Length: 205
Image (cartoon, rainbow, N blue to C red; front, side, top):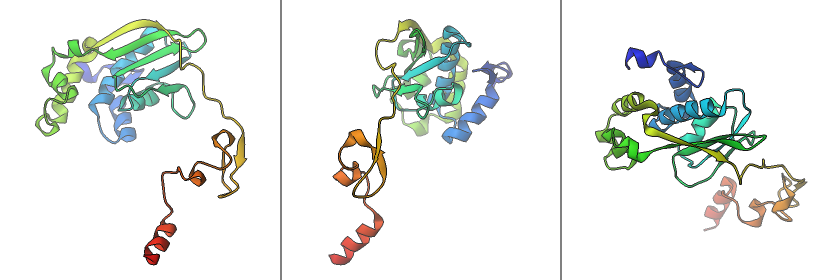
């Protein structure tokens, strides 16, 4: 990492600390998260550091983690919404007046950096493009691969509110009453089968 880049600050802290945060949380120095750091740094600057912002992110890959790491917006507190459009873009906006900025990875601009363009468009196998080469390309590019626009949020700005909670008459667990007379799992629409049931089923075969 070049010394002038390693001394850079992003999202209010030294770049080296940003990398440490990313690796501790995400598990590795994912290129998408590295790009996300520059996107958030730009969006925060545009919106204003003192503004209480909410976030909308347009992909489920990497970028939501960047928002959770470098802004107060998380899935858990409801300040971040994820739309599964697979567009590498995010928006930060003033939660009071809904004015903000959308920042995105501009593919036309990434063509100046062929390794980055080919990686994003999946034109080369990952094993042929070492991680350090890709990360260094992103560090060289910085904001040169980003575009932004001023926006006004018209949808998805309302925070999800918890409704009434009730007790499922079958499993006796608490769940959201709006989901039906019994919980989703007891309606047969759950995502798991208890291991004990599997053992019983196998023993009966």
